Every structure is written in C-alpha cells, then in structure tokens.
Image (cartoon, rainbow, N blue to C red; front, side, top):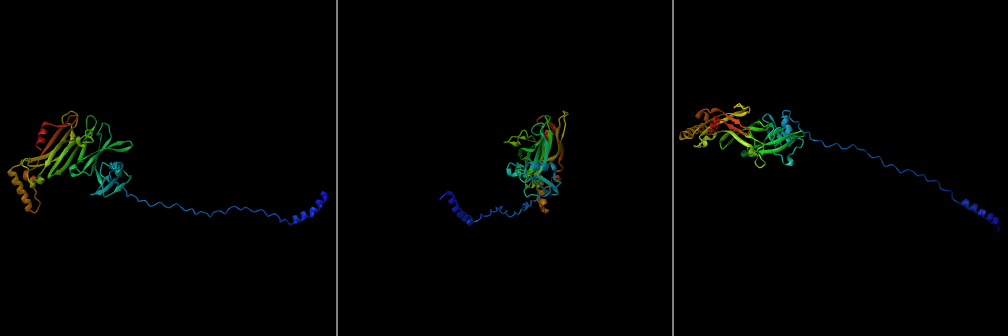
Length: 331
C-alpha cells in the first residue's frame, strides 16, 4: 500500500477519534482565601484606683518637712493643737526600710518628732550643716533621743553622723573665732527625785565614732531636790533649790569675743537634825491634809538667791571668772 493510500484509509479513523474526545474543561477560577472574622478591639482596662494621700497640713514647718522627707519616711502628727514633723521610725535611719519613700504620712501610729533644728558650721569653718534634734528610741538614761548632724549640698541633705543621748531642751549655736560653731545647750531632767538644769557645750568635731559624746562639756549645773525631801534628806547635801533661768552670749572682758553668761537662782540649806525635824513635820502636815507627803521649800527655807555666772571664752572653751567659780562651787 502506498503512503497516499495509507493516509486515506487512516483519515476516517482519526476523524472518528477526534469526534469522540471530550472537550477541554473550563479553567478553574482561583478565589482568594476567606478573610478571618474581624477582631473586637477592646479599650485597655482601667488602672486600679490609687489611694489618694491625705493632704499635708500647711501648718507643718516647711524646713523640717524638707529635712524629714530627705532623711527618713516622713510624717506629721497633730498633737495638743500643734502640727509636729518627724519620721515613722527612730534615728539614725540606717535600716533601708526606714529610708525615704516619697510620701508624708499623716498621724501614723509610729512617730518620732523633730524637736529642733540648728544651723551652723559644726565640723569645719564654712560648712553648711544642720543639727537636727530628734525624740528617739533611747531610754531615760540616754535622754530619750539624739541629734543627727546633716550636711547641706547642692544635691540636698545628707546625714553625716548621729549622736545618741544628745537631746537638749534648747540650744544656741556659738561661732568661734576660727569660724566653726559649737552648740551651747540647756538640758532639764530629773533622776531619783532630784531635778537638774544643766548648761553645756557640744563640739561635733571633738566626738568620735566610738565616743560621740566626747564633745560634751558641762558648764553649769543647778540641782533641786525639794520634791523628794519626804523620802529623806542626805545630811551631806541638805535641801537644794534652784533653776537655770537662761543664758546668752556677751563680750564680758572687752576682748571682742563673745563670752557665756548664765542667769540662775539657787539656795542650799545644810543638813542637820533641825532640818530633818522641819521637813518631817511639813511632810506629816501634808499627809494629814489628805495630800501626798511633800514640802513647800519656798515657804520653809525662803526664796533662792539670784546669781549671774560669767564664763570667758579663751579660744577653745569657757573658763569661769574667779567670782563665778566660787558661785559654781556652792551649787
């Protein structure tokens, strides 16, 4: 069979196969994936309500409050019609738990007040320092408190040292000729029925870490034991009356340097059998009248004598004049 014949015989078969072949499938449409459901965007939860600190009483001493806020966990206390400023723990605030927390508590249960603040250059001439007197955790034997010496710098307050037991009733800074300051103070106290008024000087530069009270020098002490006379009179002491009335700085010897002048009253009635009898009768009379056994020393012995004591500053400390030395020996 020729090529042409083969071709002619095959043509109908090819046509038949072509007719039976299924038509091509239409193209599949590719759709994008379905979108996820929209997310609900909720507002952020409201912050928990914060406790609003109570307002600080505007009557609080601003300088004391500034010191307390820098040195300790600060607080104010309303007592006896006054607004006291202090701390929620007692000095010297070495425990991290007592460090400032940025708040000022109002009328907390635990409170140690600042009693006084004195400005001076206590360790070196030209220094800007504060002697901050605190009521502290000390016992009666340690005068119920102490004094924190604070340096003042451009960055604020920094505690330098704490003198436990230095808790005076009142003080005045005294500027030495070399530009450094001492504290001259009065301390009133009572032990075993004897009251004492003492004027003393304190030198912060003289104290040491082992003995901070080394800087303490007693200058004048007046005692009064009349309150305990019914318990018995010491024959070697007798009955003492007297108080420190005050002190001041004056140049008494004309050298241009202020000296210390102390005003006081005092009286000593020597011990004797006659004194014992008078005291005992007064005590019995007080008891018979329904009161506590006591004496009126002013009525029994008369008024104390008023004196002025002069102590001259010699560049390092105070020395009494001869007359004042004689008065001091009789106190």
